Length: 555
Image (cartoon, rainbow, N blue to C red; front, side):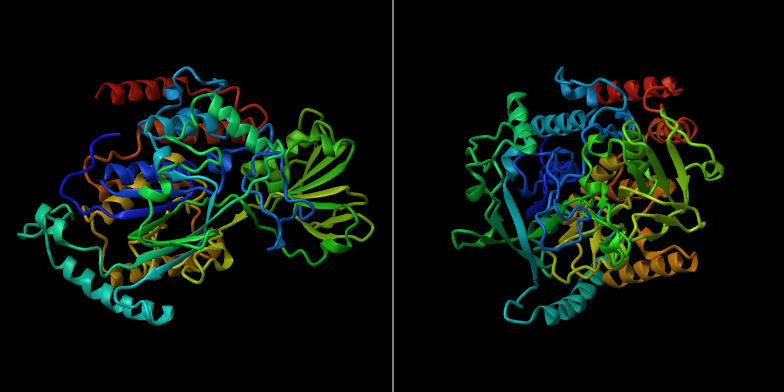
């Protein structure tokens, strides 16, 4: 994994989640010299990529807050919509599965991605930091000398203290005796500077009891153990590392036999955002006699055989699932306000292998008689199932009132990572969407780790607040809805490269081949939506990616 950076301020960090974001967060924090405790609600690494047949029945829309929740939104035949070269972390290619690959396709199955993540965890010995089958139920900031003060007063006073601290830090301009000019502190300064006045975090966890009656998630874990990836150093049968309670307990650890409360210097949230279904107003659904569900609970197409199905939402999952259902359904109507290819809006003839998929605008009414009416006035007299592929909500139930998720904007957050005013000891990895996720998680993790060690500094709290407010005002001026705050698209490259610059010269910017391959894949998908995963025209970029990996391994 490499030696920890010498002379910087180590801290005890908690990480929530052991999926793609949590794993790379743990690696980068350890590389920076921090002590790390990762809490994973499931029984193995992989997060949303751990497939299960289980669904949230009977609440297939996922709207009841008291429902039994299922984390994964994978469906059985899902293949990635990005090639494996683009998806991989910058220093760990899919080829590093070391002969354990079972799906060599450029756009592999979800199971291959899970194997990749488990190989990454094994290669960097990350299991020793993870406590499995453990849920974080509460994370409360502890501001300096404020343990007996109500939390809202703590936050107000901390805001003032942190502004003063950050302003003092900003006054240390490059070239001064206490600054190196790269935003980092001198070794002597770092050794003696405490994290205060940054807040620490009181985190309460509780064990999770899983259904062990042969669920696919359990079977998946067993398969992973068999393949040699999920080998916990001295692991109990229930998935908890033997040394977790000893090595990872922070100061003033307490337990009541069911839950445990410990204090950490910082918290990195990596719980993902593809588990809480986002749906439109559901008030009229009760009158509709057919099935109404969210794609979060879609697994296989067999249940839709012979049906007439309306799918609402035409992003990646909608375009994929409609084609899969159309293989067995009688008719499928794919509905959207806008299309990935604008020309698709003009289509009037059915498409798909069975020529039984029609494009329509979104529904305006679901009738008591089972009919569906669309906003253009077109009408389908009988519909068996309405399936919403309308995305997901950000959800942080353990951060009670610390961040807002109103209209699916996580706020106030500096550069999609640091919530204010608890920055930098609270950080969130993975908020941006319509991006290449794994490499972006990686550079976000590097930035967080270096800020927490004080090798890299943030602007003053006042400056960060001002920038966030300016960002929100600019979105409003452009008539961008709040729910698109974290959608980056083509802006992802500048964002990722900006973070790389913050980290320092040892963190490279986005490889040219990666961006070009991403763009080529998008173009191919728009031209050939039925076969872009198996027919492509970017072989020269594949060669460039392999050469880049070879250079990284030899350096």
